[in-house]
Image (cartoon, rainbow, N blue to C red; front, side):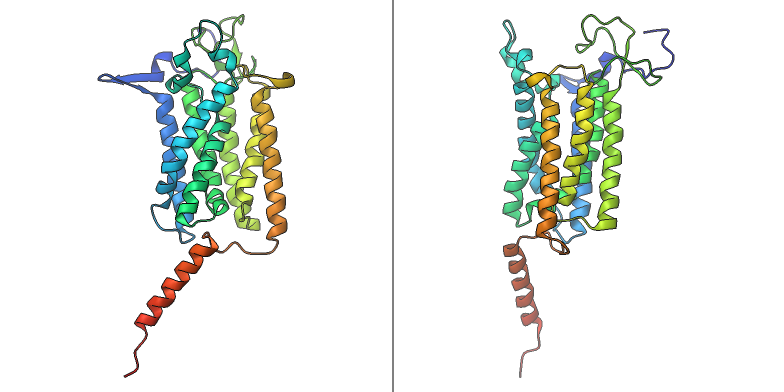
Length: 304
């Protein structure tokens, strides 16, 4: 693509993976892992500030990460049936997660199930954990989008804007019938910026209006769903199934925005003016209070 001066160059396709002995390491996977690590660190710090024991986030991640990855792949396959079940397709491609194709909305579903299971075991309120996770999740998603950059995927319609993204004609996602040298909207970059702004906005709102009670994660749903609905509307790689002519991920984005609005409204009505002081369930809080009382009695001076 020589001759293109005002554009964003993509890394050479060979950079998307490298080898260490017999192992093939995919940069996309490294970006996802880096995002997970960032989310764990941020969420851990936010929960520790509320009195949650150290290591709790790791325990929750052991449930959420595997379930999130599996659900992300299932969602992607179900919304791209034509890419996997056409005549002559390799059926093993369904499980080839290393070749890309992991839907964030699927990971939300799997991750939510994992959080529910793990927080019940730990005696932490689901929404308390989800609120702590909300900005961390946006940061993790921003980091993960770098993997799309190395894979030369997640781009939008052709553009003549100076920040148009170069995509190699040899890239698997390069659209058929489009002239080599065409520039595309860098959706991966748009989403990175949108997510980082959203993370900062949630933190500011928490300090200004004291969200809590699930309203931080509700704000995440609204913010991410709005941004993703616009990005998916101009995305051309890959083309997902489109009920009623609208891409599946746009429908999912609308559903996520609606879910966020419902959670925010319901939780505001249920807890209006009530401070969100404890991240623990009522049973766990009673247990901790009983332990503290027992320790106090043991330390109290005994009558002679």
